[in-house]
Length: 106
Image (tube, rainbow, N blue to C red; front, side, top):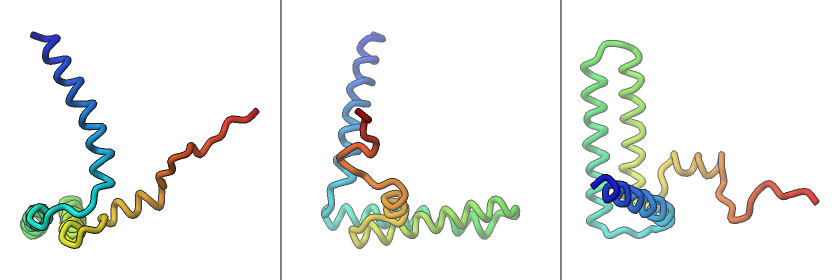
């Protein structure tokens, strides 16, 4: 039984790595999927607004503002089918190259 679960978890993790690398390159989801993802992010941003209005501490208000900003950006990015700001910042900070940046010295 445990070996079956171990094999299953290994196959899931292998597929997850492949899927994650492929999903970042795929653009042009169906319109229904983009609307669904965008509405989901709007709903979570609404939770952030609720948190901002009802919590008292500065830390909770700061975290709520971050939640709102992140999910509002993600909702807009999903609706327009463009990468979100976090992905663009990551590409600037750590660009993806096919060749290694460090070359071996001879």
